[in-house]
Amino acid sequence: MNPRLHLFIVAFLSVAIGQSTAWGSVKTETVRYRSGDETVSAFLALPSSSGKHPALVVIHEWWGLVPWVKDQAGRLAANGYVALAVDLYRGATAENSSQASKLARGLPPARALGDLQAAYQYLASRPDVEPARIGVIGWCMGGGWALRLAEHQPHLAACVVNYGALPQSQESIRAIKAPVLGNFGRDDRGIPPAAVTAFAAAMKAAGNNIHVKIYAGAGHAFQNPNNKAGYRPQAARDAWARTLAFLNRTLQ
Image 1: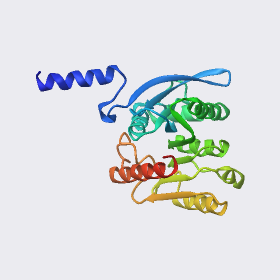
Image 2 (image 1 turned 180 degrees about the vertical axis):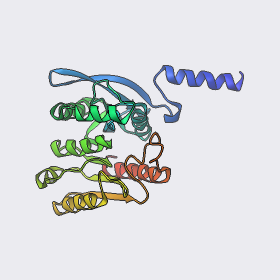
Image 3 (image 1 turned 90 degrees about the vertical axis):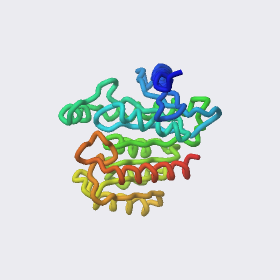
């Protein structure tokens, strides 16, 4: 067979059955689960191996459940995690910052927290998930929601926050029981280094396990290559490596 034709067929089949060649043999699908009286959808990425796996609730940026977030879920699944990327906007996505800001401001906090709690319960109920090894990871708006889920779900085993809003009250900080990994940019005007170091100090004072890194020369959303001006590939690679090492320690 012509090599180019063979590659085309492989690529076509990968897309057709919900797999990505960039993720190896990861399988993906859209799933639905109950959140209170409503049904919500999410993007699910599954490792290729059988048996029970650690799992992660994956929370999108203020853009919504766009392809980049799904790609992160696929990368996590390729590393052995059942990854559930929740759609907090219920199908809506933004194409510019004005739309994203409107969607983020209009997100009902109680509904969002309920959807995330339901996502945790959905993962815990799956036969391919080890319930004691479920964590959460988020970026930007999703990073703040990752911490909020950790505050309200004491059974989470790990929390990764990437330049997300930080809790202010001591009560909220004391409620976080999961080990926390944080990746932040020194030039982030919305979440300045002083706020990060203060949060880390408060977490440690409360006896909580936390590891943060503040990247010089990086601002907000430095991990996303779609952020043309702010993407920092070296810092993004380091943050990803730190994330995988942290998850391997806490969930594997």
